[in-house]
Length: 605
Image (cartoon, rainbow, N blue to C red):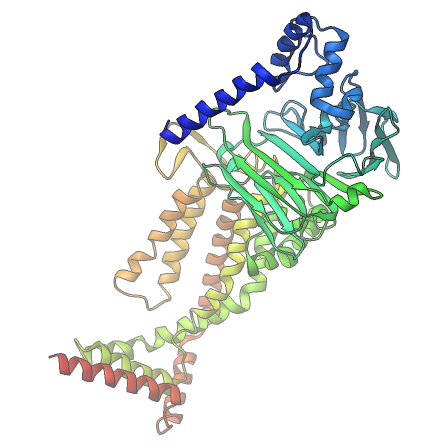
């Protein structure tokens, strides 16, 4: 404790002593003791005002305490909690009359990694609050007991149920929450109305939500890394807190915000405002000691005051899976709660991969077979680029003897050798990059798959061969120790992918002109992927494995189809035709640059 803190503490104690000595209100001796005892209980986070205190309070003391804490809302601070439950086609929703909030959400079509019913939120690990200012203090309306109008029921498709919670005050003021629960889907509507409170509350109205995310997935580390708080500003910008950070992440939202979500790997809880929040605060942190919670997240959003004191404020909650087909219809840009990659990768997934996947899903129930068919479709679509790449490599291969002669002719002078090689390329009409460019154009699709498979909820808990869950890693052997950068298990699909990549690389090297160290370096990448992808989705590594096998077959087919003698004759014809052809402007600039570089070297010598 430094000097400033010590002085501040001493002054605080002096002020408190003076206040209680000279200005504290008088109270009956018996009631003072009783209120003090009960105050200890109220300060406990989990305690309720209506719970039985260790010291019996008189009615006057209890009323005085409630009035101190809740002001004009004190009549609603005592009561009996009533739970109302609705069940539609996809979920079971429980509401509590204490606070008039959602108490529990169970998703009927899913189970957690243990096989138990999937509880997305519950009252032990999540709470929603609305705070208003009254008499210079913040009143938490979730601590009030609401009158309930409506009863729980099981809904059918097409039905809509309404549940109304109301707090009525002695002088006619009231606050009403109206929930609408549809017969199907994962959305719940909420309307907040107030009457007569305009002059009694301050201009700051806050919606707060804190949640301890329950562990739902097998791979705990991966689930943590993919869980975060995501939010969208009204200007269309979507952002999120870092999911991989082990430190507390927090952000003040200075712009109007249309929705905020607590996103886990495969499930999301979110609030969408009809009229945007004017600002707010979000945070997330990890309790390393808690192995049953993925992350602790919270939001505190400022509601538009004019709407609150006006007619009504409308919200919509989403409690459901991160399924792109569902999320895209919830709110603008809400589908970004599914991680599909950045920029062009997201477009490829949205408009190519997902439509193909969902089309196949309608007719085929085995997701391993769907992945195999997707490989053939993608390789077929890319086959023109692949063929063009092999044609380019074949041209370079038939030119290799002449290129070797040029190197031998200018032994030790790489600059002159490169200059003469470029002249040869121009004469025979070859772009030296013609074999690489088509391969580069295929890379975005391979990277798009890197995002699609690990985040596809359709693969969650779907088995294929020895893999019990295609959305996470497959394991044929659990190790009693952890290998750095590798893990504590052995993924067979990753081993097969690595072996097939090495085979494909070797086969491809037989038809290329790559020489020297580069020929060895190209085998390093598959070994790196063995470590990097060992804990990735089995669906992804299985896709890459099948894709390598199909690519190997394509190489074999192209070898038989491509006539290298015919290509050589065509190049010789081009050489004769272009023998006296003037150099292109690009070639001239290249020659000038090489000459300038050569003169610099001579000057240095």
